[in-house]
Picture 1 (cartoon, rainbow over the protein chains, first blue to last red):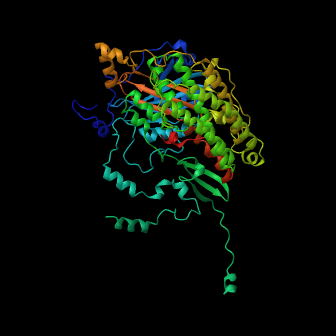
Picture 2: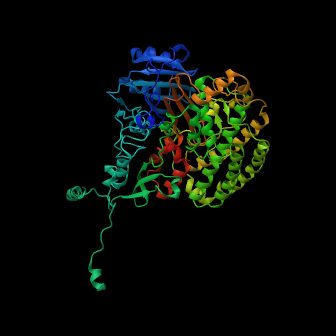
Picture 3: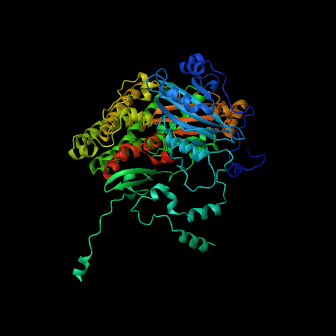
Length: 233
Length: 401
């Protein structure tokens, strides 16, 4: 956060700063697993893959899962008749800043059993990869794209991992990371220059550019590219 | 001259697909949405939605604001049901704090949320009708919406950007006579709904444009993350007001309409019935509206009275600290969802015990609903794509956030 005597606008230039909690990632007290049937079932079935269990906000059960086996655990939670978490309400991520791991958060809901469960996977900053769950829930398609866009987490096996809210050619990084300044990484002049020199072709996927009968959308010939490069100072 | 031209053989008609950009500036996209359509003649082969034109990074902005300062950001997301967003945000934070609001506040918020469900559905009704060529329902619906605007204005001072909630209560109680104005509105709305239904429900053109268009099965709908009226139109009985009740919704007497076929027509029927059911809830809520304070008397969130501040040192310090530092929310995280007008409207907040959230996340119902449009529109005509898009009831402010 801003130093003593610093301006409130410092944060705009520097990013919101790391979470002030010295104890590391905030964790509620260890919950009583027996109060949620899915948690006990998970622990007895997956053992050490279930790293941690806690209760938040009174009655919300959170299970920390080994990120290497997230797909396996979630698949079981979705398909096992005793669990049947058929609605993936949300996929999001949390960055605490200060080098702490990024959490991927899955909010599950079982329509039949009327139960909620929150599953979290912690990814170290130097290895932000996790298996995609699009094959389990199609909801995850856009939600994982959003997490990729805003946090830079790579979802292995995602069919269409592109930016979704930010422009495709956005080069300033991943905005919801704690080290990302509110006003962006580039200077205002550079941001304006980039905005004005956008190429309409960037708005289409390569696949769409190949669709016939779209005049003016064909990728430029190699000759054009060299000419363009010479024209640009 | 003419003969020479005729000598040329007629060119073979190309059979390759064509690319059509629908939007981002197009009235039928209901906002700044761009749909890149791959067409074979008039048949849609593939739709690729392109979103993000209204991206304002609300979630990032929230990390720079104290807990109460986030409230104004919430109503700018879904400007079609602003009070709903105001409410769900503070309800999430209150749940994380373990704060129980007063009985009057609960009923006031139920009134706000159900009123805005009607508010949002009316806009959907008008704009969807106009998309398939029916102009009159648009005028009727907007006339009724205007009266909810007036109710918003007389309560909060703003027509759209209401910012009516505060953590632990509301920014004010209802002004004198407000509930009477609401009752007046509730008296005329059923008549308008009847009129609109008589124009649309059995109208041959409307039926032709909506029946069996954009069909999705219940299982697929759930797997794709559909919630709210869209999911219920596919026959899945999932309504958070019944399945995970908050604010004593289990004590209100209302029905949840369920569709069968999951097409545009069922989505229309479900929303029409939902407005009538919301009226029933409003009626009961007005009848039970209890007297008493609207804000909790919890020193963590509520300011001491002005008299105390002027007479008592501790109260003055307390007042000063709450104003300058803001509310402190205990460390932890909380996901809380309500049945929004467009689907499951959830908020997820993470706190480290400070005056600002570490993370504030909106679970956007429209965003998830829109992601299914590619699946729904495949094989339909372009004109059906317009109807499918309308039937999903999206709001771009919340999709792009």
